[in-house]
Figure 1: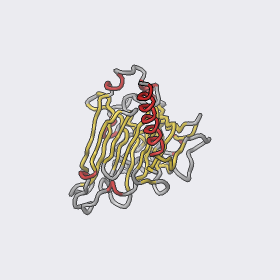
Figure 2: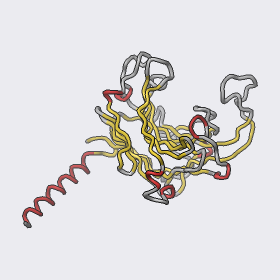
Figure 3: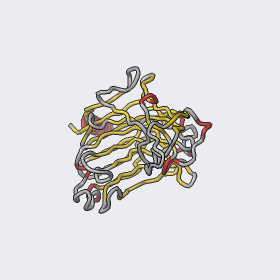
Figure 4: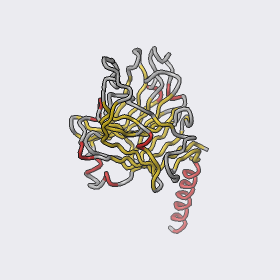
Length: 280
């Protein structure tokens, strides 16, 4: 019996060691510095960018503090420098900026092909908040470039949800094929009434066969790469066989964020770390 137990423990330890050595950390940002995030890795988006969102993106709303990246959404009121009377562009139609926030990206600086991406974060869950962890490809228009939403949070029919999505292109410009999982927030909050007060780990495991998206080790969505083939616009290529770059942002309102709770400001989205692993 003792020998059997020792043999079992040996096999278990061996498996743990193999698992530990299976992944190698190839890049991370622990956000241990001061001021804005490392400019060698991160860019800032600026302005009204996408999805008819309410916020004006600016660098002033993101900084490092106590070993974390803080993205803060604020209520502000000032003239919109891109306002054009009579413009058909939704962002230029707005005479004033009412909200500000930040979106940081590694476009042109850090990208990766396959591997494991882990992001530890605490997200705001107030009405109108739309935090996200996601990646995009380069060299093709969206969505033929490919999009992986490791995390989105917003309300659907008034009810908060956490989403895990993958998108690619079809035969029409700027039209996506979505594989989307929408999990009601109650699925998590019923198990932990203080869920939104804690940091959680969102993980993506991406290899030549599939993309698997996890939250605290719970599999939320799995997408086979055999299915993610672009249509005519993307020349029938597979965007998920090419590198992607990272985006971290806190959006407000817009197409999916819904009505904004003006009593919830400032909203803080805090990221403890971003880590990229690849197989040894």
